[in-house]
Image (cartoon, rainbow, N blue to C red; front, side):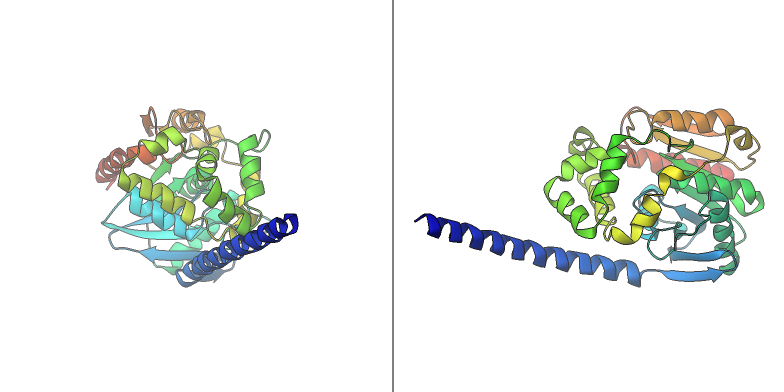
Length: 310
C-alpha cells in the first residue's frame, strides 16, 4: 500500500510538472515572438538602440522604467496619453534588443535618443519618462533643449538609489534572474510581487476593470524577463543629473507622482519640483507606483499641460 501511495504521488508530481512546463513554454514562446516582431534596431556611431513607433499626431519619445523595454513604453503611452500622439518607444541600455554597453550612462543614452530622432527626421518631441526612465529622459531634455518641446515625468527617479537598495528591489532582481522563475512567481504569488513593485493589494483591489487590465498587462509585458535583466540590474548604478544642473533646464516640465509610492518615494518628485524652475507638480494622495487608480486624472493633467505647451 505504501509503495502504491509513493508511486501515485510521484506520478502526480510528474503530471503536474509536465502541465506547468507546457503552459510555461507556450506563454514564454509567445512573449519572445511578440517582442521580436514589434521593433526595429538602429545602429549609430554611438551604439545600437531598439525602437518601435505607433500612432499619429504629436511625437512623444517614450522612456520605459525598470523591467521594461519598448513594449512597456508603448503600453505607458497608450495608457497615459491615448489617441492623437505618435509614440516613439525605445528600449534603454540592456533591455531587449538594445545591448548593454560599458559606458551605459544617462548621457550616452541621451545621445542615442538624439540619433534615433535624426534618423526619423523628427525635429522636436515631448519626452515622457516613467520610473527609472526619468533620469535619461531628463538628460535628453537638458542636452537637447532645441529638440525637446516638453518633459513629462511619471513616478520618476530623480536621485541616486544605489547606496541603499531596498530589500524589495533585491528580491525582485532575484526573481528576475530567469524567465521561468519570473513566470512561476507571477502565476503563484502575483499579489506579493505586485506589492514588491509598488502596487499594493489595497490599490489593486480598488481599481476598476480597465485599470486592472493596465496592471495585468504591465506584468505580462515583463515577459520575457531574461533579455531585460542586464538593464534591470544596472538601474541602481544610474547617476541622475544633479539638482544644480536641473536648475538650468529650460524645457517645460510636468511631474506626476503618488504620495504613497513605496518603490520610488514621493521625495523624488519633490526633488524634481524643487530644482526644475517653473515645473508643475501633480501630486496624488494614493495610487502607488504607476498610479493605476489615477489614470483618468493623469490623462487630463497631461492633455492640459501639452495644450499649453504647444
